[in-house]
Image (cartoon, rainbow, N blue to C red; front, side, top):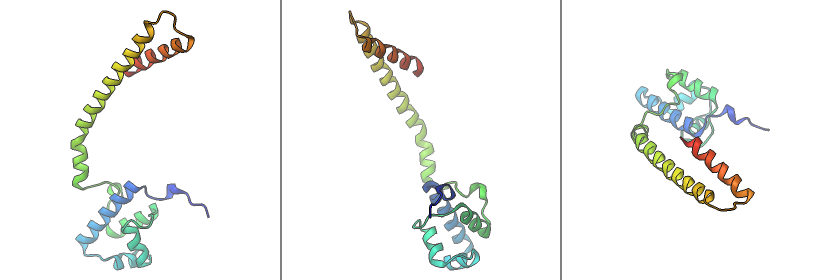
Length: 140
């Protein structure tokens, strides 16, 4: 039987979903057995889905969220410090990418100048020069 992967949570969504569900279960003192009974799912299946061993379908995630009173809009949002750290690293990553882009631009300019200085460039070299000029222009 062929399955459609669009019915399943992505790995990132599953990670956030699991974290949010486990947090809600802890706050509400709900066990996996109790949750499984409420959503009419075998306990082992429920446990495997919440531990990441089994794929989770969207309708299952929404059913579990509804039973626990979780907001569907925030169900797949990460709420841990790791995401905060990613947000803090973002400006640094943007700077690194900008530096790399500038290095690449300089290398492209050097290559273009080198080709332009040739006395009798081949058709391939002229074509490469045009491509380099276009690439440099597109970068800024």
